[in-house]
Image 1 (spheres, one colour):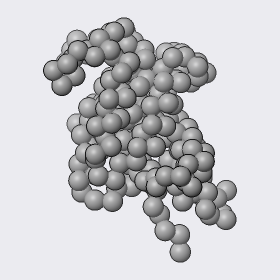
Image 2: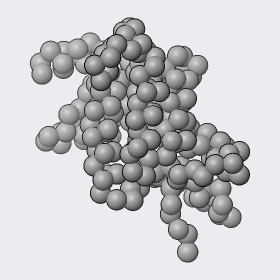
Image 3: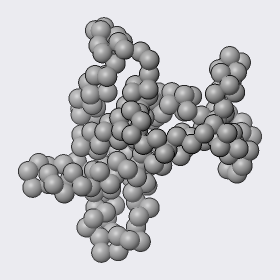
Image 4: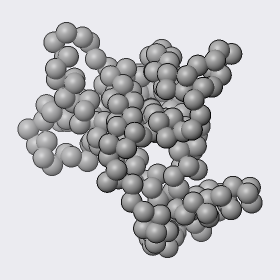
Length: 204
């Protein structure tokens, strides 16, 4: 019987070729209600802001890409450090949210911000929040760290191939399943075109 304890078990399986989907589904695994509530707040704040900046189509694509990329990096680093440290399993959406946060700050024009009443450089904010997240129940420091690395790699333009043009995003806006999402009451759909996103925000 395969015991699901996050993405870290992935390398231990003989049928790993047939369980590739677990490189994504770990973001839906939570051990307790507190972890679920904390993750819900993180998704609402960080992932929501990232979606407003990128649009729903690109946000969905990058969520999948970040989840897989940081999971693979996590598996490599866990294998290297497993003999030296006790490492928590990667579970929940928090690592992906850290990737989105790092990417957003890397592409932001802001240089400084106020955090906890103290003026900080924007580039330091994700790393400070990484230390704060360490106290969250079932939070994996290594997985969150991998999320920051992946987010910075994307944010600073080292994965420019992931930035498909707005015309492609606008085209996908009209296709399934995104066309269906627009029609669901209560679902906030953010257009792929920058001009449409600005008009959307002005209407709000």
